[in-house]
Length: 393
Image 1 (cartoon, rainbow, N blue to C red):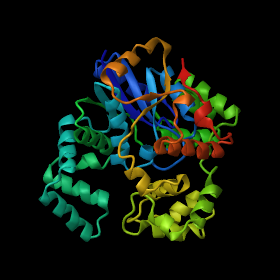
Image 2: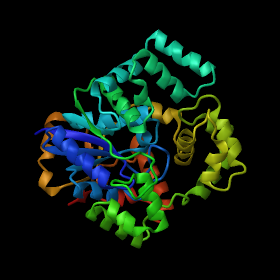
Image 3: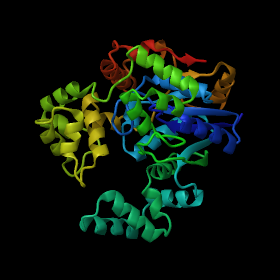
Image 4: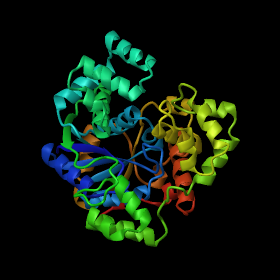
């Protein structure tokens, strides 16, 4: 059996995602597709609109054979660590290939960029530093330095999915994983807000859902995924973007200086900017808008706010450098043979039942906490991770 893996968020699942699953299977010549999906919080630090179980069912109906969770310790990180966590799980399951959507499908160029970023030479590092000293923001400085070092590759770091594709390839190098890389051309823009396009983005789709524009939402999603969404909405199980605002602001306003200093991925005093903004902001969005600058971008501050809410620290993440388990969210009954593949070629233990979740394991305890905080915003009781079960279709 040949298995291809995909790393995703599905917040929520739409026709573009279904297209990628189909193309991943076809282009990788795979017998099965495995998805590693952000659990309750996303890479930008936002709470997912739907529960992991509901989003997993959407993917299974659209062609995924099994779906595993990417815990918050890796999901709510910069692109490099997000990719590393997802690739480590796919590799640990014994996947033969990894497929990803990208604006640029030049695999040679993507691999060149990944190799340089993973092992940068002195000239490349010096070029980045000189541009930073001139006041150029870090992403632009890196892209320009990349173009100087590898003409034609600078643009790969200017589009969000191509940047993530480079991070996936860096992760393969760092892990020593021999998975084949299979890029699939992305249709549409990552942050496009328009719904009147063939495949609207998840950003546009979330906006339409929150506006109650159900006709356009229906047109943008596979039929089964839309039915799951409407059922969740009717049952009051959608997590609205502002649902945890008060909890976040309470946390930020009562944290000590030492607690701010313990947050992950700090540099350039970014935590002081967040601390100051929290004293006057009355919503999460107002907080991030007040704190952001060219030096402190919105997405990075958003992740930092999520880290504070979830109680994530540098020490915690240092003790969990790589995922040590694969948390099963769902699978197709007609694909159960895939578990023989995992057993033969994989090395990570697969957790599924509540009894598998050792609450004394710090990594599992941290994920259970993230689930409970997400459930609070969705109006659900604590213990969701233990009661949602494994989705089977």
